[in-house]
Image 1 (cartoon, helix red, strand yellow):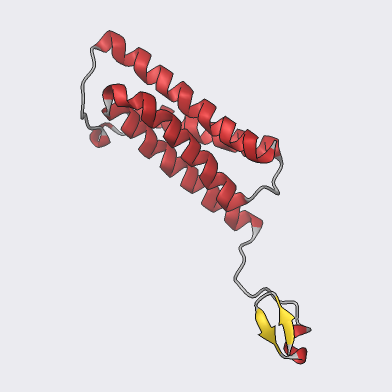
Image 2 (tube, helix red, strand yellow):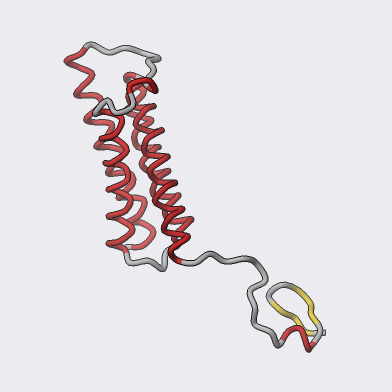
Length: 142
């Protein structure tokens, strides 16, 4: 018996270098990363739009979640500029989709803000989401 990454194996089985667990191609990972990041961005923008002043807390959490999902799916082996661009782009695109009223039936309101204050709060919380996503990716890949 020989010690192998998957546990103890016989000498004949340990000579094979096949992966013990399934792996995904880079194109599969990229597709999953883009779709997951866009989904989280759209859900985060819907939460930002519907929660009023709580959006100041929800925005950075959603941005950091998008960054973390990209890191988990693509890994740290990707180019840092590539990851940062994908993260910032997905957060910005998801926000544009929600705030441009392309999805009018999905909006909800837990707390209303005065119109002049709402734009400022939404803009600030989206900016915080973008900076949190960038900060999370920069902290991991440099």
